[in-house]
Length: 357
Image 1: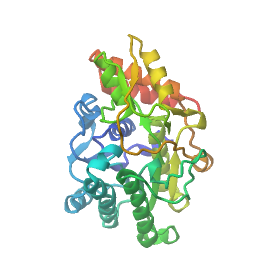
Image 2: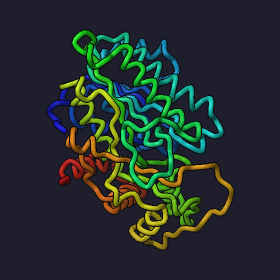
Image 3: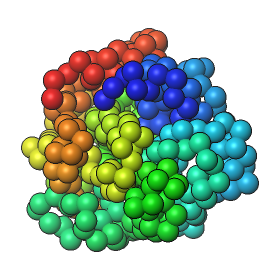
């Protein structure tokens, strides 16, 4: 990734108030981007967006991705060159409770975004961030490749499969790589695994649940200790999105398709491994216990094949899962001691950029 490329670029980021969006906003600001964010208010209290004062270095627009009229106005006013779409209803268990909200946000929100893009001549590159859960899950022991069938068991996962199909349909119909000379827009989609990092306070996520319990001196209650997920630090996929956006901008037709950004195979670990490593790293008597109640279906096994990103984008994960957990503990201990959290984020971004592949 080339920091010089980003200097002065006009970027519109949806979902900038969320956990991943806040980390990406800080990173983009540090590279001199003219950044416009479009999102709902921060989804949690506390939130990374607020504790790291993310909105100070950017144009912060509160808006709903389901509001096409407002979205079009924002695009017309700010004329972005690069769009990164991360606004979403991101939680599996919430999607069982609110399927209409999940589909309207994740599917029609994507349609609205692509409609706004169709009417904005300044745009050259678009990255639509979906999920590793977009694939039809067959509980395989090997990783899913970008050409596997879309699917999804629950409303969240299925909505992300739908968002991928919508993206492909718009690309084929309006932004086909073969007609790039006439429209000048390259659209890629990015599918990442379970991200972890400092500043995530979402409900029903493993690390946030652990940090909440530990900070209150309680044992962490866990549903599925044997489930295996492609865990990765939040900066790993974000680096992939940035790299993909740059490639789409510079050489659009060659990169306008779907891309997986996941951890190396040996970091697809069971929940129990994370629990044990994090409680040991944190110290101070941190512990966990099994929650034996009834819970909605969640895929037991899910892994991504990232060969394409590694070979064609020259993207590689930089941090092991153990390093990621240590960085999370450092971040949250700094927060508990009332530190400067934007400075902490920038320090970890700098560490990431300096890390060897």
